[in-house]
Length: 284
Image 1: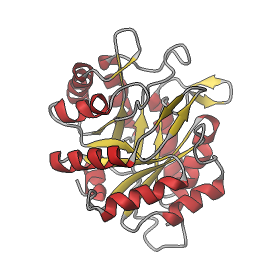
Image 2 (image 1 turned 135 degrees about the vertical axis):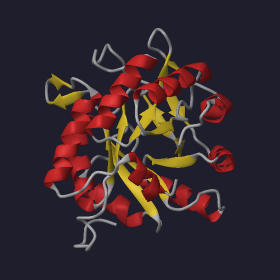
Image 3 (image 1 turned 30 degrees about the vertical axis):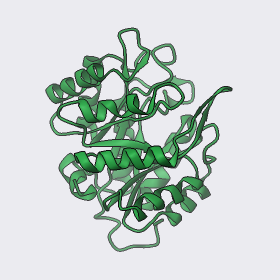
């Protein structure tokens, strides 16, 4: 819930997630955005050193284009294992309207070791003028069941308040295990507007036993993630969501964005969760 003077504020560990790459803009938007497996892994290692305990992974092919090729996800997974200590790995299942249902979940089920977590997008999302990622209830039940069967924890991505009942449905069907890990997404094309009061409303409406993080696009990333820290939530930063450090200044690296978040958390007296503590918080 939002901050209400709760007694454990100063003890509650903050999970910092980083989304290094994404599946949309690339080096044409910011040349520092990592695209290839070794490049991603080195960036992730720097983010882990700066305080990130979880990384959200998209794969790109040799030309920097988005891909669901299992071999590319495996190459990223292997490189992270080589370069990082203990950071939690979270694979995307996004890509609706481009890849089939099976293509989207294949990397989660076929890489070794499997990721710790994987996303489930809880409803329709528009991209540009002609593309909609449909994300039906049937698909999300399937994804949640297959993750439950294989020991991968879902990260529930909620693009607007209407997706909260979809989360509740998966809980009622016993397809999720508490604590529930969910991401409040602000500023998408047809998603929740990036307004402070909407962060509060989102947190107020979540089911019990939920842990949540705030994700906000572009210029909204800094103020809304800072708000989430003060509310007792968690945060996601990174160049998938925001390529700038400040207005007119491109981010030098994902680690630069993580470092700023860690400094803000320190000023707000929120201790930062290690990967081991993140596993404990999320019941992994």
